[in-house]
Image (cartoon, rainbow, N blue to C red; front, top):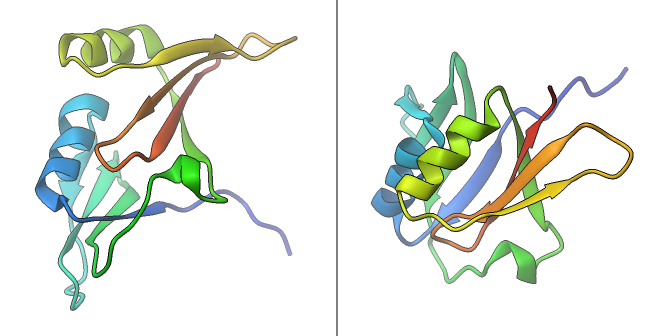
Length: 122
């Protein structure tokens, strides 16, 4: 028995449409099929996989940096193009390198204050 990978992240938001637009416009995720849950939301896909689930917040929520879950990360195939897209859309980000590694990273925040890490391994 072993965990094979992270399946998805779920973001609860009071700005469902703004959050959907952020992930679609800036990270090139696409809206796809979602079961008819009672709470309104979206499933956002990278290819055939629903990697981000969004749902309307039923109570006030805080930013990820104020919680025990600090961030989530995506592995990306072309960080330079993604950073150019973010810059063109006016989204702030911070770049970093993993010590003793060839991993190039960028960190940004979604409209809800959720920290997102982008990792590129050449």
